[in-house]
Length: 497
Image (tube, rainbow, N blue to C red; front, side):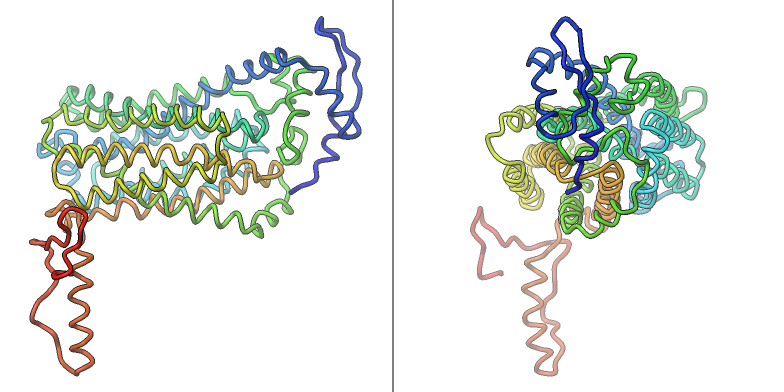
């Protein structure tokens, strides 16, 4: 962990009474820092952090929700006017399997550009860089409305991933300069709460815009991209005007006193990034690359994303195929999983704030419920049960990352180390986003995307025996279209297995 004693020695302290009078003293040791912090009452701390919350929580939540609406809308668009001439698959003459690459290509670009984007965050300042990200992705998103074939759709999806890269790790890295590591659950909860609200808002938007099909000669799916792109461009202006940079940045003095700015940095953990740190440190990059925690967190994120991104991408298609509602009301079925996730995130944030259990321990029950949801997908056939699995799976996937990212942020050090590690881990972690959409090939659709694992195992045994005897086994084979039932309730049928 980086030694920030030098940084602490640079912090200016002002010992003052509550009436605002002060005397500046430079803290030169931990005792001086403690003495400076002791001059603040709990009421002052609460008032200062309330200022920070007002500046950040909405401003990180709304752009992050917008980002998720803007990249996940491809899944909603897929089932707009499904089966009709104005459906995106019909207009662009693209198969469902080929359309899966719309999401995978987006994440390929995201992986490539995530680290370079985040390393520029400190140099250009968070306000300028985040507003650039928002503006450029809004322009590219609006351009989706003009595509005429599969190739042009793939191109704009790649550009969208490139332009959006760096937003989440950039926000997360910036937050570590304002919030202590033991407070990070709060802003992370807000980010992911708004992220999952995107499922509600995105579904309502798709539902409403579906009635614009044919307006001005444009299909509804084109209107989705155009209108959401224009909104994102306008949001970039808000970010430019309002988003703070760091506690001691010049713009922060417009809403914080000098004493409050000193306090916000003095209260941070020793490994937290400081305003006056260099824009780039090669040593911090090497330290991150040598840290085994980087790869353990990364592996964890990849595996969870394999399941989560696959479910997110296919959710509108699953809910449409349940038969509960026809067009365009099928879009409204996505509100249930998204709304339940927002409630679960709020509850998780409260529980984590109480510190009843450690963050790693909190993630384990979440993983269990996620596994249960996917077991349900492969073992039940009733539409109601499948919809319940959608809700459980979406809730578990969403809640998991609240303790995960708060935990991760507490293990990082330095401005460059924090920015690089979050971007590097997040970029490789998006491999799940590349692979996830490809797990649902149309050839598996006939039986609800179940794969005959037990049947494969059963057939493989006599084939191995025949091979050892120099023969070819051909008496039976794996069933895809009439898959055998190997379970009766929770008990496995050993005769078939």
